[in-house]
Length: 410
Image (cartoon, rainbow, N blue to C red; front, top):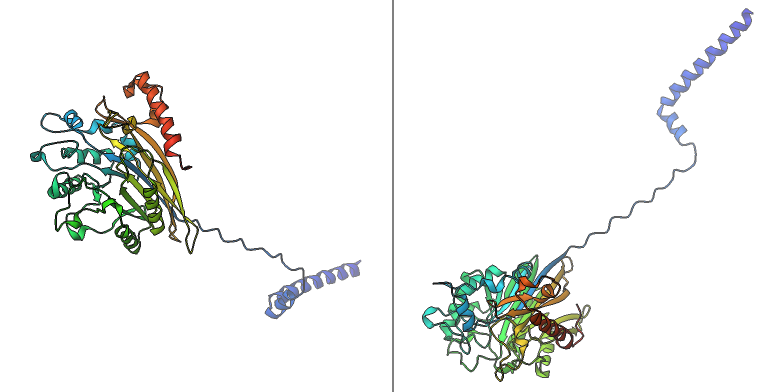
């Protein structure tokens, strides 16, 4: 019995010694390395996750362009407010559309020559200065001032018009006070550089005074395009991402551009214009996309609005002087411009429009027809059922037979 106990104790002791010895050996570096080198199953290989795709930096700018801004004597008389003038009622319904854009542009087809010259309408316009501030309050940022009425009150009237518009916070292009001002107008919007220029083919027979050729971008009958093409080139050199050219052209009250003016548009598109916006006919003309092939990239899509019609005026169907009621309608062009900030590629990513109508019998209020025709509350627009039916019929005609005649789609 004692021998068994003794043998058992020896075995236990031996196991303890072996355990201690094993622990000691495992602490030795060479033994650990030997143990670690013992072949075993390879660890699973984890595939690295692919890096996330970089998010492209695409900037956008929304531009709204309105047509001819004309003020006849009837409008001046209605705007008289006892010692001053107020045109704001005309813009009460259209202001949200103008203010919602990043940049809003119009064609200023009148003159601010001051009260001492006497206020007047057609054929030689002179409008109260208050119009400038009212346009700014309504949402306008830029105004084209090169048109057939720019010299209605002479060269001093042209200069004073620029002064008044600038004092109201508006930026002009197309007419200039000094030779050095006649440079490309670059406007930066959300990191996108936009260039604007404006030209007219007529001054209504009023000659530009000697020594003042710089004061207005005027090319008689657009018999050459070199000055415009040169400006487009300069604009590109100055870093323009998009070039917008305003052309005061065409035949009054004609709803279609001539072949001559369509050819001019194509030449300007090939020269580098991205948008061409027309005025002067006082009625809307078609919208058109022109495709221009490029040497080192995809084709360019150039948008042409041959005429935006009247934004505001007192014109109406008046036989035999004004042969159409379409003078009461205007086009509000609404485009989105997109720029890839990495590649610099800039394009017109969306183009849409609304049609407006001037309610002459209600302080010449400009009504956005998409809003009017979708509303069930006619009272707020001061319209009769008969007026509404006439507007609806004209609206459908303008869209289908004129604006989208050249297969324009947004």
